[in-house]
Length: 434
Image 1 (tube, helix red, strand yellow):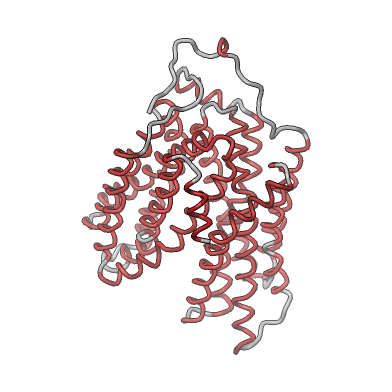
Image 2 (tube, one colour):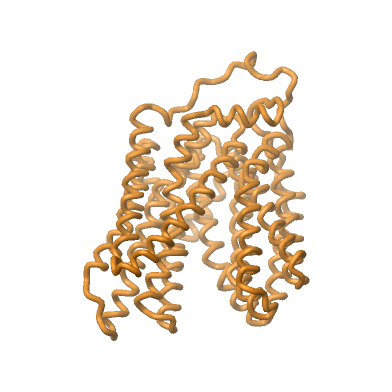
């Protein structure tokens, strides 16, 4: 697998190669710190639970709420400056998290780490799409491999470093982002955003007027709600049946491992297979269907009597969630590269970063609402003794999203828009340069 991945990586230009390594390193640094931040805030710093939630929520809000701004700036100023700005800002944010203990400073640091993601995420994806050209689908498949590898390795490195001290973890993560910033400044080629722009408001109006893109974004939101259940509903189900002991901890770790390893070893093969046999819209539809089916093992397990203990209980607690995690990973592998490519096609290769920014914001809002509803369904299921309720709802969500994508594809709404004539664009504006 390693040789195959490296061979594919060497087939791209230097910019694409750097973006792959960037994403692995970004996720490595992020996930070696963030899973342990809440414990640090509530433990050594002794903050109240609501303050811990506030600090973590500020990071998520600042990232999701600023994606559109980050994408807009990337199209106007260039992709490279926004990537570098995001990396530098996260360097400062992570270092501050390890060095301060006052609540205002922690909130500011958390906001900085979120804003950093809003700056470099749309820019890096737009840059990758521009540099990969006709090989966008394959590039995004490989991108997802590096993305998942960082998620998988980060918590393991963080666990070792946090055993020494959380400050060591923060400063190490900050150092990783600092080195990455220097590498981008020296080695990442400059790239221009596609298309001319007028004012920021006209730029936003252009994207908001792209109805097929907005419909696609709304239809895809459910896929992010479903995939996030690897971090929410599946671990809660494991702990509901397996308790809070070592077994449940190990079983939850297995969930994350099988999800990440499935993608690392299977993504490029799945993408190649799908591209040879399916149009993009059909591939995304099948991916969403598989994600909906991912909750069938849990739905089936809910109909079984719960053993009093022993191996039977452990199998019931571990195997259905693990199967669901694998199927969620498979559905994401099928859909993700074509999803990213479809955003570029629906944008008409204009304002690509702005489209990615708005897409991330829409999906981020959907994840928040979806998690609230999923949590409510889990609570209602426990109170009413209806353990199948959340899994039924999530499976139906997958079917609804797949049906929506199928409808968009059949009606031609996933086809690229007609090119915009140069005369119809703002003659006073100039193409953004990096």
